[in-house]
Image 1 (cartoon, rainbow, N blue to C red):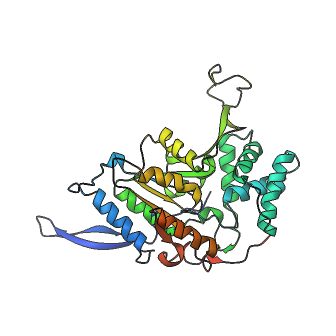
Image 2 (cartoon, one colour):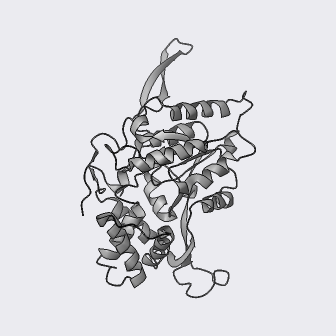
Image 3 (cartoon, rainbow, N blue to C red):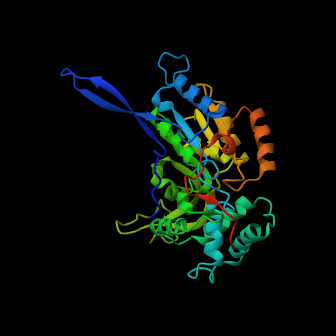
Length: 353
């Protein structure tokens, strides 16, 4: 099983006292939030926003059923620089190293996995539109697996040491200050959704231990079928009680940019009022949120600008920050705003191959 990640990480409990009719003091625990953050503009903006929209006397009050917050995953609340996305690393392993698959992988899938390896090990640039190339290759690489088999496969890989770090597995590589954001929003009546470009079922597996329900996860999708369905269409076939759901090699959607907006509309049915991301693939989601005609909204972009505790491209981070501030997004600086990233004992080290 993946190592458990506590959503209530770094929490202090204060004591408040009240007296009952017998004058006996009773202790009421009071939650203190954001113990893993430094004072910063982004945190102030978030807290001021939440206080305003949850105040029933405010003109900006939002009822709980409309307090929708959407979060990108990779690079927003879980690491993506080891040295690339978890799902890219997983495909590289599956195709080039897994003894049960590497000798039967289709040639186009093998080429895609090798391009990931060349990028990771040699710094060779990935081809243009590689996100789509990867999506098609991944659909083929896991085709035929039941959902249970795929979950087991992802969990097993997530237990491996995260490349570029000491004392952390892939499954433990959450940004702990961002977990406090989930905690805070849930306590204030927000429903949090993960909206990622990564495979939906990979995302579900990774976020299971931080309390994100499967129906709150939107991601890249492949077509599913029942295990004995064969070539019959779903409208013509009735699965039995003993069948499993199986992944196919047919890609339905790569959940990036405006596709994120389309999926939010189809699956949530409401426009978010808060949005969190870290890349250009999240801008459409942010703009959809900020364009909400009914409520006050806010969007936050996390910048990977800490090259001491994490692997970061400082020049790219600075470029992104200026662009995103101009767009009206609040900036979260990993370097300046986080007291810790992955927690005590986790140390950045050189990548190993």
